[in-house]
Length: 169
Image (cartoon, rainbow, N blue to C red):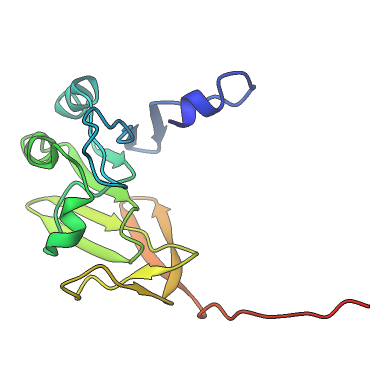
């Protein structure tokens, strides 16, 4: 999606990046091949699944939707349409050590086998992932990723938003 937005600009969107010992693979999950897909849902292409399967050396996947489910039905419905296939591709490649994602509007760290998924909170509003129904919250934040000998992620909490009004004369 970003590639098409920047097509006539000097901004270049890479699919791969190396920082120290880590390879980063940027996966596009914005495709909606089915008209009935829910708002927010997406799909990873066969081409991008192949990039995951072929990842060499220690790799970090950067993607909008989470690859591993977090347990709430309402949220899983607005995730990846082919989530099981993508998750199996990750779990079958021992080089995939980290996933950095968003979409959940909450800081959630999930570890499945040897892969850690870090979901970033949102700076606009949060989601309550303990609720049985979709519920927004005022909890906002960001995530800081430290790349060094390992990859560390930390939540940055932002005080709740407050609406303000101003009078101009």
